[in-house]
Length: 92
Image (cartoon, rainbow, N blue to C red; front, side):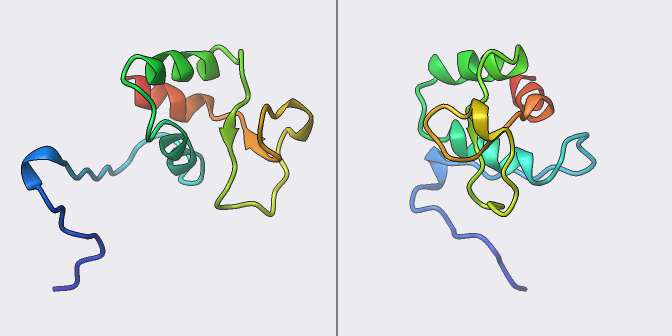
């Protein structure tokens, strides 16, 4: 059997997840997850709600960089994306 992920050093303090048939785009969702990865637990929901309300366009677009999406509205990055559906998915 081939494993494509690393085994955690401390399994009691980590979790793995997988989802199928989710109604979001496969490119936006990992970028949104990467944006909230090291945020505090109180800051991440506020950030996701701001993206849902279209108050900020600050989901950085790093992995698939050949598209320049909303370049005039980026705040702190050269490329970013409106990831409203992904933010709603992570809020639920």
